Amino acid sequence: MSFLNAEIKKKANIYHDGRVTSRSIVTSAGENKTLGIMLPGTYHFSTGAPEVMEINQGRCRVKLAGESAWREYRAGERFDVPGASAFDIEVPELVDYICHFVK
Image 1 (spheres, rainbow, N blue to C red):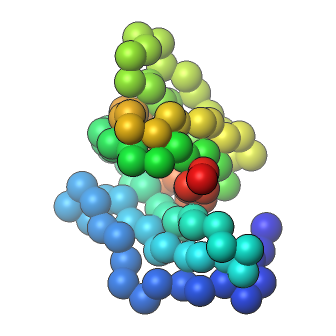
Image 2: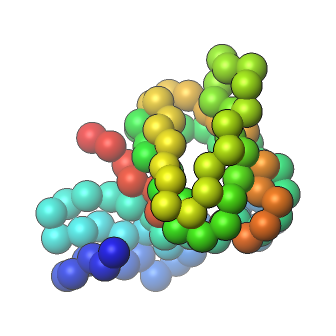
Image 3: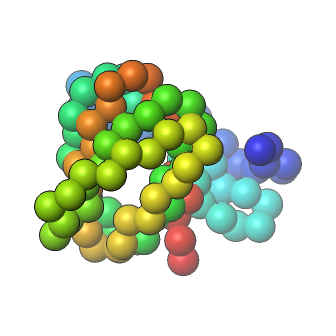
């Protein structure tokens, strides 16, 4: 996947002491996304807008807010996170991801 004529924000988004980083982009169609890397670890994230997390490389386990079960995702898979919510993610190996912010 590539994004033609996209605006890339120069400043990195850095979370969890640098173990999760991303760069924000805005596509020519006005879509907001982040392209990022997660190093091994367990993380908690809150959401404002709904998100679709697409795993490009690696694998992870995710537990959405209000759920008790963890679900595993691998490269080529994606999961939805509701807006005004949160999720926990366990990353046993490096994960390369795209986060699509849904309007």
